[in-house]
Amino acid sequence: VHLVQSGAEVKKPGASLKVSCKASGYNFIAYYLHWVRQAPGQGLEWMGWINPNSGGTDYAQKFQGRVSMTRDTSTDTAYMELNSLTSDDTAIYHCARTNGGSTYGWFDSWGQGTLVTVSS
Amino acid sequence: SYELTQPPSVSVSPGQTATITCSGDKLGEKYVYWYQQKPGHLPVLVIYQGDNRPSGIPERFSGSNSGNTATLTISGTQTLDEAEYYCQAWDTSTVVFGGGTELSVL
Image (tube, rainbow over all chains, first blue to last red; front, side):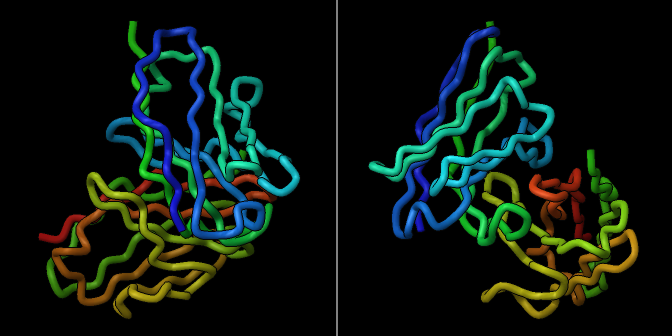
């Protein structure tokens, strides 16, 4: 199982961000993909998940209205878009697969992380 | 929204038992997962669904969950166990992480 993310980004406040996560080594549509971020020196923060099979999503309340998770089953790639960036969005963003469904399961594989810096 | 609370830090001497707690409303009714994260590394699952260890995780790691508190226990703690530990649970269809506990072995 491999999850390979797009490279580091520097964004200005107010801009939008789109990070990709290309999956390989398993059946892409069979496992939920999540996005988890970690600000410098801080803990893990869950942002939401996408069901690659249906395209259904669920987002953490904190990010609703500002985040969008999509996928492309032709390339086994998931995307996370975050709008209206502020300096508080400076973090490493990870995609991660869960071994379960929409109400249970654990993270069994992680992308390498994408460092996003928001600075004027 | 659902919250999981962990102590910010726990210290233990080598060879002793480390106990890390994770508290949440009726947490005992949920599955709890524990991750170990060392600086500059990705999180690694150490306990899943109660007291199950993934392959490759030493037997000294164990878990329990009852009432409002889940506990990660590391018996015979080694210096290589120094890391940040996170609990995780599901609240209906959303994932919740605890704030993390820094385990110092000294």
